[in-house]
Length: 479
Image (cartoon, rainbow, N blue to C red; front, side, top):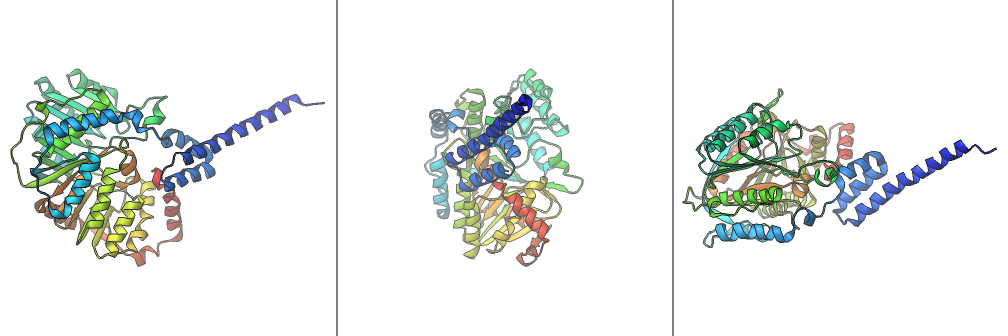
């Protein structure tokens, strides 16, 4: 006698297995046909093969590649970049140091970023000094305030800035705010609604809601931009949250931010207005947002953005060129070190050619998985002669890079796959001796709070630590 119940159960089980393995195989085929970076492709294949359930969930939420044309059309992108940059920002007589003419030309070609002279640059290495400067400049605003942050926390720092913005809006100043929806996931809606009720225009960047969750969660706006009256701008690594001032129980929060006064603020304004069009579909290009400026200083600066929209990886390509073309030294600070092949090869090549390449990382990170993956790359650079330092006083979140007493860059970009390939980022590249020497001195001061890592000792670490780091490294392109 046939046990129909058992037979039906077996049929259902077989059907489920076929669908399950079909989904895995189908997903692997989709990953391969997407023609991504082979390293990233292999990482996804390994996850799907050895952790199929986890792999399918992660790929569904984080792995699918949204076509850039669906996020913003090429025609709209070109139109937005062309009008403000060409009509309000173009300068013909800006003289660059000869050794950086190619780097500047690269940024102009792939990012439409123009260098501007006559800028004054103030540098902040603590949350307190940056917050004080920001409050001071916001209080002076007469016409408009444009603010864009990855994290705008509902804590004493966030509420202080919110209340100041509300006060300025009630006094007739145009205030526009962009926050990243993922970066502010846990911030209650009432925090931003209070700003809207006061007349502030507030927009979330790539709002994440089911069922569109999976197409947007992987592309985040990591930029930190403030533009005040088109004359003063802020850019760097600090968000608006209390921890950027107080740090952690186990150490300080060490970061770097700059305030720019001068023509380079046009670049920050352009970046913000492009993002504003992205979230609001409103084109703001009136001359009042690009006022004529006098010379504020001697600094020469170029604002460079990168994003998953265009065909190039602008900041990654620029850093690769800058490292390779360094003559004497290239110092860099980053909280996360998950380098792409081009960045890793550039660091190794420069060090092997005799350039003093130094890399500073936090000894203790804020994310254990990323810290493990970061450490897996250290032997690769140490073996080439790169000097590596662990910052001991707390969490190093700074994205500071300086080279040859002339080139320096501060911004939101980490040395990792996510910043280079998935995030919307912005950096100020500065070509002047004064700024470079100040940032070099900051790096050297930080180095005194570090312990140097030596290859001989690094190789003697316990096997289980090295094995765990190597395993996590397989996921590096996906972190």
